[in-house]
Length: 396
Image 1: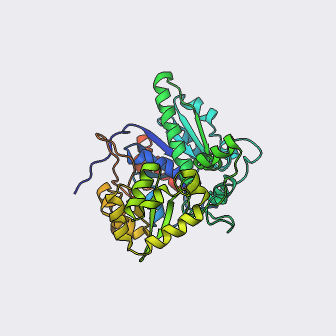
Image 2: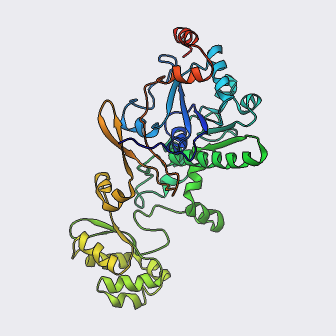
Image 3: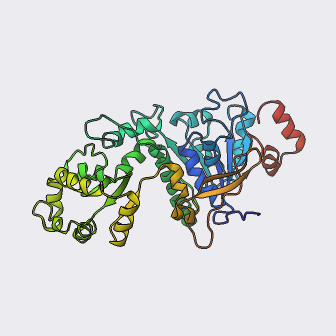
């Protein structure tokens, strides 16, 4: 079956200088919605950190860099830099996640790009920000998780700091950068000018702390590890059944009464220790012990059916293979098939955004490095002999 390319962002050109996760996550949004995203990477043997993103045709790289074209370009050579600047003249956005000083040293900082193309938007993603005392520090996701407060609210009480099981600082920094680019593109429609968009792993991680951060800033309370318990609401979290575990979520008083009726304990709803949220939090340990004995009497499936009938929020706790076997996940199309010439049909993670007329599409996998050199440099007006000469000089 021939797949229809996405069209929402057709005509938008993104130059992707990024690597690892945050920048590629940002660019993937645009690629999946139809922008012409050109992945620019150094020719083989030029980059001392070559391969740091993992196996090129492995799952992670394919998931991050689908729907892109690829060129190789040595930005440290005068000819390579000149070619890049010619590309900037035809582009809408440049995305980079170098250390802040690198783009200045290369001559591709925002003011340099603006002089070539006043409409250009430069998106810079760093570990700690473009200025300030930590600007030169290299940053990785787990470092940002630690500095942003996440590791001290994750895990069981007293067990010490625990990282989240996903690269949440990296991924959220990329998504915030994509949002910033969208804002800059919308503003450019009025002003005709581009601008510099900046995001960092540290800023993104602090923003993702959300209500935990606000609790400190507004009330001065320092949140602690709470394991699987919600910090401010109970009963909400993990309960063990006769054959496994499920999550329950009981919010307001109406849900509390429905929950008590559903589990066959209507008296709990009006018990003086549990009759309001404040009392339930005050006596959380005793309530958890009481509920644990009840839930141990039936299977997870039985309890989920009972709670669904009572309109009480609850859900299974899946391993990743069970996630993609779930009928609702399959209905949502979060595993998208795409053909790989090396391995046959693969499935990658779909976009969690639905548009009624111009949805995202996943049509191509990450190409070999430089697979589109001839095509893209010909678009710049270079002839075949010129391109071949650049190849021999290791400019491309």
